Length: 46
Image (cartoon, rainbow, N blue to C red; front, side):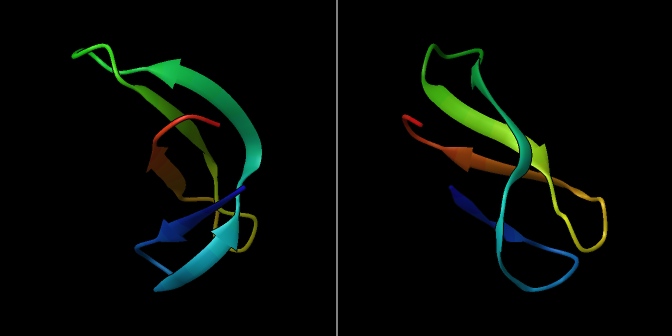
């Protein structure tokens, strides 16, 4: 799964992706950017 890295300014493959639920109950995927190590986040079902 891919997400947009704000630091690298490009779409990257999520490393260590895990499914989470946001406060409002919507599903999302969270992980880290393999290039810079910044947290990346994608809203929606995995």
